[in-house]
Length: 215
Length: 215
DNA sequence: TTTTATTTTTAGTTTTGTCTAAATTTAATT
DNA sequence: AATTAAATTTAGACAAAACTAAAAATAAAA
Ligand SMILES: [Mn+2]
Ligand SMILES: [Mn+2]
Ligand SMILES: [Mn+2]
Ligand SMILES: [Mn+2]
Image (cartoon, rainbow over all chains, first blue to last red; front, top):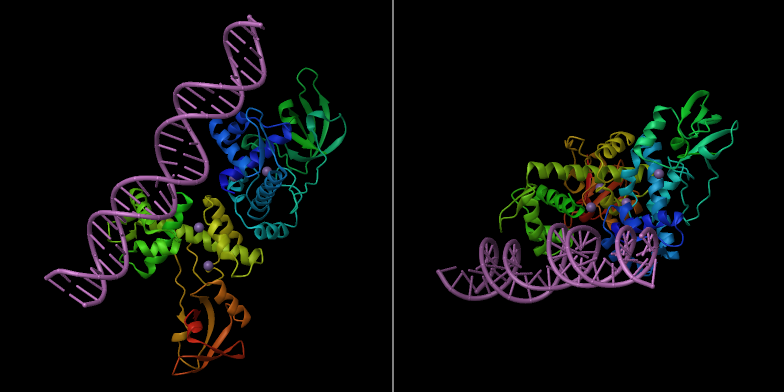
């Protein structure tokens, strides 16, 4: 599998989680910053390799083989992100780009040794679950902060949006995975929340609360 | 720079150490397992990018820019080899192939953080020197075991041939970097050596002695 | 110094992955 | 149901990096 093929497979995997019935050509093109015609070409190739099932105009889905490949790429991506943050001291907003390259290193032995070296982590620095060597993903129980009842306490366990802007905002507000959050009040008009994070009171917009997972 | 361009630059660098006057097309083709005509094409491209000076039929040399690029690739290759052996527990005959891929990961920050994480090593698992962030290579004093006087003691500090076969032979004989070697006797006829390695007596051929560096 | 052998380059293809522009299919509106 | 809009695919082209086969330059041998 080439790097390009791997990038396509991974994008189809991520989009499948939202559109399990079939992933659109344009959606793939958007994620990979390429043109729809290029996607169509690649779908034919991936279909020939039995990694996706593709029917003209009907979107694509991953085959079992494609799904397994996708999980292995995601596994590599997330393990490398853990390495970059835990061992090399990168911050969580700096690692995605680098992991985007590291995820294509071929050795299976490498990734399993890395996994052991890191202590078999179950989640990456953004709280996303890491598939194990067999591709099994331990589902992490979580809710969006925006959908949680008032006056109960939770732990931050992940982010939905892992853009630099959002992660830097969280850093600024001293919100990290593990932080304790309690929703004090919710504004009816625009769903703005008053929360207490690690004891400190804070007002956050619905957009923020809608991108932060708690448990 | 593409991965292919980087591989060419690195090979030219290694061959330059032996042929500083100019590296031959066929030599490059041999190292990269490609055809001479492909090399010619690439030399034109690298020349256009000001990474090599190339004149038809006269071989190539690296420009300052090309030399610096080459050293950065070698730096990455060797640092990753240290990581694989010291942190992940690979043996020294397993790391070259993987480092051949890892050396192409782009981030400068990554490699400098990796360097720090590893404790700024000066040599890779095969005893080859690691260029620092500026490209400066601390020359390691060393002699081939085949050229050393009899009855003096040395430390193994590197291998000239780092093929799997040779490294596995050394493993079998319990010879590692750091081992203490003393040449007891040299056979006039074929230069076979009788040596004492970490106290154990051993007979080794000239071919072996000619691929082991001591200091 | 010719002749022969080796090395290197040129010319013309191929594969991979991309693009633009045009055609086609499907979805959404009148 | 007909028309318009959006999504998708086809057709044709291009750049990168490789190849084969043939031509040209250099080196070695007679
Ligand atoms: Mn990637
Ligand atoms: Mn992540
Ligand atoms: Mn390489
Ligand atoms: Mn090495």
